[in-house]
Length: 372
Image 1 (cartoon, helix red, strand yellow):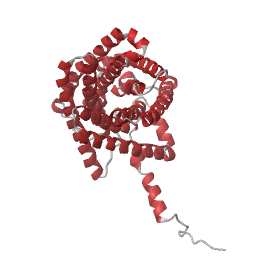
Image 2 (image 1 turned 90 degrees about the vertical axis):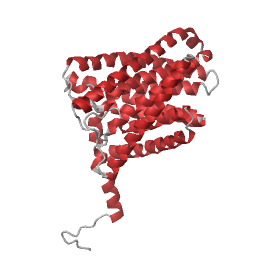
Image 3 (image 1 turned 45 degrees about the vertical axis):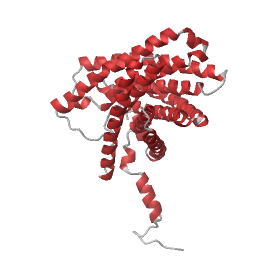
Image 4 (image 1 turned 90 degrees about the horizontal axis):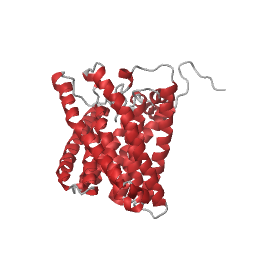
């Protein structure tokens, strides 16, 4: 019989202890649910740079997006394993919960990238099913929780631009669906186009509901600089991705009789979405100046800034696609300009992330947990 002297209990091997110690690092516990916004931003900027002929830059960015996607899934699984209660709290929180929709959009954007950059149809379908499963699970879990929870925040404390990530996720399914539909034969082409059309229409309705509440919060409640978090750029990004989905549906109208019959409606609403998104750009720039220049709110890296990069890249891609679908060639210079703006914004966000990582202080994403 072996007697163990107090203070000399057996310990796990050093390598195992170190591994589990790292996996249970506080940064993982507090990881923002919206960190998949980094994948969204990188993936869409990859597609934007591809459309102006920056082939090498596009592929490098797409490789970074794929690597980040895999790493973030690993971190999320570790977080669920060691901190399930914290994940559940985030999922049912009015501010942090919508950040989970970045998982849906990131999956769909990667699927769109595999189809656009490499013609990997099988991979596109895998990500399509992943996207659908995530969308169904998160949509009905989050909004059911928001409905039935007993303690709820007031409107000014419970809603932000991050709620529109639900719209982005919905429209991302429509985008991937239209791209897949163009790659397969009938009758499944008809089925995918119908699903894409349904998601496009639902995403538009969801935007109207949510934007009404967000605009009401904007104008009738006190607004501090800290309240204007980067995810408010999703106000524009949700309209940009709706424009992209509508443009792709218009291009697919010859493959589905029901799309052909409502083509004028789709064209009108696609322009409507683009015009609404365009209106938001000067407004958001003005509010950004008010926040950082007039109110001198400190400008420091936050994972939520990826939520501001994504809309810029999406606006570039959406404008280019709408110009092609509707033969609006005069819009191409705008699309090209926003490619460079989005690439510059991505570079700044990447620099901020790298600087933060080198100094060993990965942020938790604040209380908003939104927009990526």
